[in-house]
Every structure is written in structure tokens, then in C-alpha cells.
Image (cartoon, rainbow, N blue to C red; front, side, top):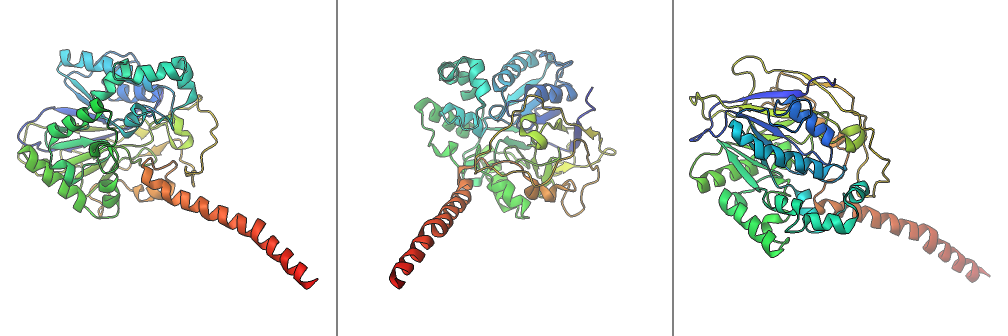
Length: 396
């Protein structure tokens, strides 16, 4: 049996005017790996023995989106989540899956990250397209996913929430998403680069020490919702070594940790975020807390093997690993004193990031690099030889 997951028990003291869940389990991007998904759910106590039956009692499970692409099990993960969504309410629990950018990509026909084995399992491209259509099994489910969710004083969204969108409030944001899908408008602002499923402005700024976008987004959402929203949880931007990232004094949590084993050496991490929301609201201003009621529980972060990962000839726009991620890493319980709860070692994230930044804007530097390489080849292999030949003819 794989050792227990790296469970981060962060005590969330106080949760605003309405406490919607006593215990919240947050799972990052799963990218087509049903084995890791089941293991995470099992370690979190919401299923047992890999059987898709809810055992989480009154837990609220939040999956941050991007269940599809890169791996081959996207449909199986959707099926599992739909089953748990049906069963959890009878036990006082709830399952929330958020809309991720890869869900949006698949709906609009961008299958850039789809494994051909998944297409084969569907019976071909036509059958897969039917399943994702507005009336298809997975098309209906994906279109129903919220783009933003607020639980207590914490907002959850796949990419991040900038103030211009936060000012609309949760209901209007989700309504705009619904209308965009109905109209087939994948260029609607709510689904584009600055919207909640795509933007990395909040997390990138926070990693650089600039918390202004985060604070502006939280303030705008608080005003729109008529209650104070104090914290944000995002996926989309991957941390490494199974370690989630905590920034801006613990007011921002980044929970994507390359869970999918289909990332190869970088992936397969069985990690989830567990938030307890005590009834005591005396410290309602507290961000994600470390050890307020005792030491944070620390377990060994384990990786699942990835026997189904096939060799991939990566396109030039993908970055390759610059270091080998260890099979097992110990999560550090004590927060770095200068990071507001940020786990030590996270500062190396950008140097160790192993895969493409999915935001289309990130392709520009690679395209420019390719163009420069082509120009250099032309200069050395075509222009200079012709110039030398012309000079020789002149000398003759």
C-alpha cells in the first residue's frame, strides 16, 4: 500500500457570516489519472478501497478542475465525481467540481493535450465529440460546473480571480459562463485569458511578493457578495514535489501539485488540502493557520508509479525538467518565517517546473525563440555561403 498522502491540515479559524462546511477537502488538477484520483479521495476519507461510494460524511469535497487531458482517464474521473455528487448529500456532504481551462479547451474543440488512447477508448473522434456536445453526457456535466465557488470566507476558482471579475459576484460570474456556453461564445471575457479559469496574474504576482492583485480581488468579491471573503484557493499553476504553495500571509493557497502520474517524473503526487472550520469564530480574520490547536499533521508524501505513461515527443513549446523530482519527499511542517506559511523549497518552483504553461500568452517567447533559430540557420546555411560564392566570382 502506498504510504499516506501528504495531508496538510490547515486550521481555518473563522469563516465569516455563514459556515457552509465543517470540513473541506480540496483536490487540485487531476489530468486524466483515475488511479491517483482514487488514492487521493481514499486518503481524504471520502471513499474507501477505491470503491466509488461516498464515505466522507458531512465533508465538502472541492476538486479544482482540469480532470481531463494529458492522461487517459478524464471520462472515468468525471464519472467518479458525478457518482459522489449524487451520493454525498444523503450523508450531509457535498462535492463541488470547478470549471478548469482544459474543460473549456475540450468543449471548444481544442484537443491539443488529449491522449490518442482516450480517443480510441471513446471509439474515435466523432464519438468523443458527441459525448462533449451540449447534449452529451460529459458536455452536459462540464457545462454545469461553476466557475467560482465561495465556502465560508474562502473563494475557490481554477486560475485566479481578478478584481474586474470579482466585482460581478459569484452568481453573475456563473451566469455569464452559462450564457457563453449556450451561445457557443468561447471568446466571452469570462472564458478568456484574464478570466477565472485562465489567469495566472494573482498567483504569479503573489510568488513575486506582490499581493495587490489578490487583495483587490478579495475586496471586490467581498463588496459584491455583501460579506467578507478573506482567502483564495487556486489550481492551474503547478507547485512541485507534492508541496502546495501558500502566499500573502496564508491568504492564497495554490493546490495544483502535478497529481497526475501522466506528467512522468514530475507527477503522481497524492496530496490534498484539508481545511477544518471550527465553530469558534473569535479569530475570524485569521488566514490559513499552522498549528493553532496543536502541531500540523505531517505525513510522508508518496508518489504512485506510472506504468501507463508512454514516451512523448514533446512539442517545442513544452519545457523539459531541469531536475529529477524524488519519488518520496517529506513535507516540512514548520512554515518558512518570511513566507506566511509557505512551505520551504517552494521558491524553487519556477526552476523545476516541468511542463508547458497552458496559457496561450506563454507561447510567444517560444515562438520568438523558434523564429530566431530559423533566422540563424538561414543566415549560416544560406546567406553566408551565397555571399562567399559571390565574392569568389568577383575575385575571378
